[in-house]
Length: 293
Image (cartoon, rainbow, N blue to C red; front, side, top):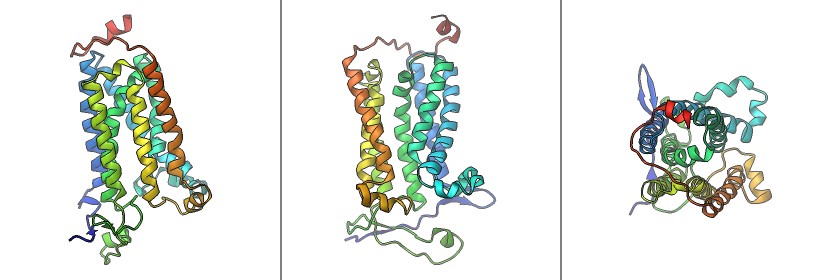
């Protein structure tokens, strides 16, 4: 019988004249697969291919900037307000998914106004499908980084993570945590399951005919699962312990509530409105013809 799993994976996939981290690879693979999926959806619906390259730039910048600022303002403003220059040191860690979500929402509002000239819901309903997949990859990257894990458990799949990771990577003996919930894996499984559901809704049920439905399902399930898993996850910052004692929730849960409410509202909105007609020519459109419509 297995009592626990001792996790000794090095966060660096390659560590020589160049350094490649598993976390960075997870980001890169996720963005690449997401781009390929969006390419197929855009071609399926006959929109200009140029829209895709613009979307990639908007989302890439918004994800990094939003996630970084989310960590700075939501979790550790007390430190960064006194060390403003450290805000730019992304390589030292510190990204918040809620901040990334807000950044992407703002970016898509701008993208819809100046690129597609369509309702933002059109883009959101398609973009959130690969985002669910990318979220799963990022959580696996967190697993490789020995971070964002849960509380102590006696379940056989509990992980002993390296607590002195930096020192261990420089040759010190590892100091292991007690067997803990691998909440990175829990979240990754939820996100991959959500990705499969959204793919089924898009390709098999044509749910994109009801603007806002796919987006609403994404918000509701992703942040509801995040909300529940937070109960067994360790807090990211020490001050959140007091927050949990005061209101029974941590910052991640409080930030998730508005997104869950928004998701439910979007689902109701989408189901109450008639389905729209969408053609599926399975080829990219001429942008000049699109602009004349």
